[in-house]
Image 1 (cartoon, helix red, strand yellow):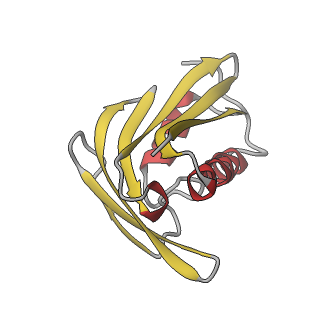
Image 2 (cartoon, rainbow, N blue to C red):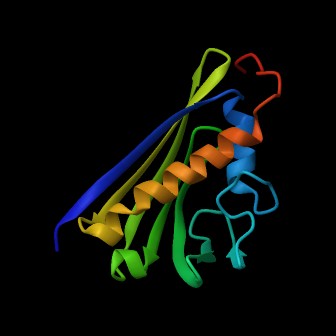
Image 3 (tube, rainbow, N blue to C red):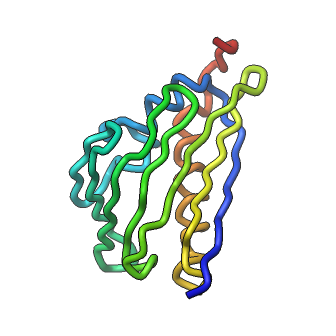
Length: 144
């Protein structure tokens, strides 16, 4: 099976600390876990997650374990789903201060290079857009 890497980058008007805290908190609107149909989340190194997302009339289960959590610069975890054909892929969420904004880069490597695998780009683009929307209209904070 051919594998690929998906990269999505976004500048967000907030500090890395604020963005990191939203991303890792299941109760924060704008984070990837918020609004899940079902969620089990233990955001610590070697902690596990189960995420059920409703999309296009069905529920899509996702599983993984956290590999790295370095506040406020990086969260890395595995990602297994029907779209990865059960293969353990790796998602890396990186934050870099960029003046009063933060450059957020999400890399998802080891994704099958097929239609379903490449659709992860749409999902991660949506997730980063939801995250950015969380901070729209708020005063950008100076870098820490």
